[in-house]
Image 1: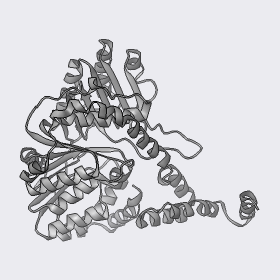
Image 2: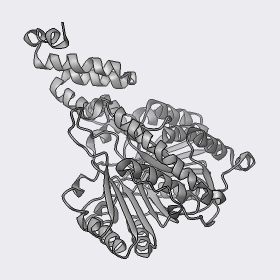
Image 3: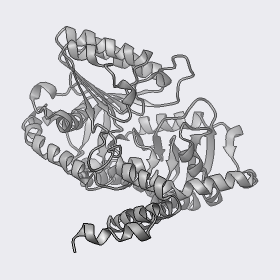
Image 4: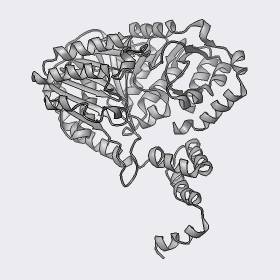
Length: 485
């Protein structure tokens, strides 16, 4: 009896919902997902077979391994070309054991950890300027684009076709018209509003534009998972920008109060690492190799900061950003200051935060008072009570939307980047964070987070316990879905 003959009798004895469960629940089990995630999906399929099946088909079933393998293959194919230009980075001065031992204990341990998980070298002689507002970020970006001599490479999760997006696009068009190579890589889901000809004039001027993993309804699935959440700009291989800001009005403050976010302008050898990541993503998207020395000029020694550019994504063996953040919290001896817009911690991060506070570390979280993603916001609130009971201090950001992702530990280590504190950022999306082994920068980041912590907006345990029953119900219901977020 073939499969069709075996399946036909079930059409007469099972409802459509039961048939969907028969199809999808074994798939959940066989994918060997984490137990909590698998149980959450099974509950969703049993309780809401039609809605649950639709969600699982679009975002849950990890058939994206085919695309991930393609991404890995692309990285392998371009690797020889990138290695061929590595000689131009001979002055990067990768830290050796003696230099690592001279660093504070926490930064030395974290540098070794990050290096062991991927070829993400620490580089010295960088200059890092923290860009504290969208106005600062776009001023630097637009000035750099206007002055570009050879190439401009942009990679953004969201590139909005609004006033800010058009302003940036016009600068890129002018750049392309005067012979500068312009490449723009935008995420097909995060920048879906850019469809419909927004980049046509740039392409007509000679710019190259492509999307990352277009969300097509294929014979397998609607591919909307595993997004490229990175924010990268490289100008002439000498200036790099990265952090939490996309391109859109909400970051610059057109017609609205700007979102609270952080970004960085980097000069020095670390720019080569940003360029390598862009080159791999670009090759994956359109098969054009950028493995040429013209994109990797010999870096000038711009400052004295140690920087490590760490990518993370489903194509890598280790969830590097998650493990570094987890390790930084567990290694902390004095204080951990952390700000994030989307807080749905993994069990290991939750334990790390609580145990750090219980052993006397000053652990403070700056989280949004409101969010543009209600489900994530309410799921995050479900963790507050146990964190507060452990001694973690939580502050609500009361300004505009909080979108910055930053952490400072013991005044020696800081990280700023694109990764949120949720499972999607750590395991599903392509992310990038800069690890900053610098007392100056760590104190700067800590000061920025501390300045946004209004004592009047601290979440106090006894008051939080008195929240209405409906709030508790909403929090815990959303927490059940947290493995799916």
